[in-house]
Image 1: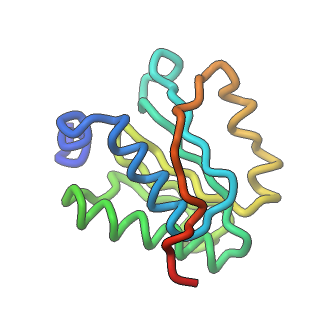
Image 2: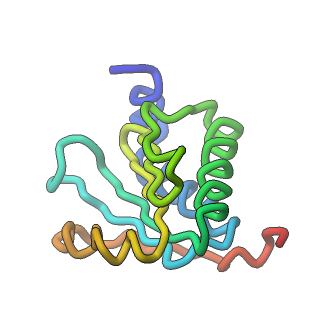
Image 3: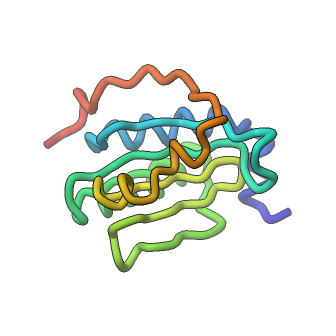
Length: 133
């Protein structure tokens, strides 16, 4: 177990999932959804999925998550994928995996349908009301 996975387990996957969702929301991400995949996947506990309107917004959401998780929990992702392409960026925090996608990529891969047996974690998000434009 690497340091990030150990920290993730100590903090709690649900707390991390909620914070990642808040960070997405702060950057005005579209359709933020957190799926509880415990019991369905053996590699993580939560998927947090959102869309960014443009590749620039996808990157901004990615940056906000990295900075926020580092500041709040002193955590960096175990793995990051898609940073260069910016159509689907994945950040792996052990117990939580964040997926940031362009709408057309999200429509194509349909993660929520693929993991349709996973219950959604109820989120109380503000829609990025407090986020600067």
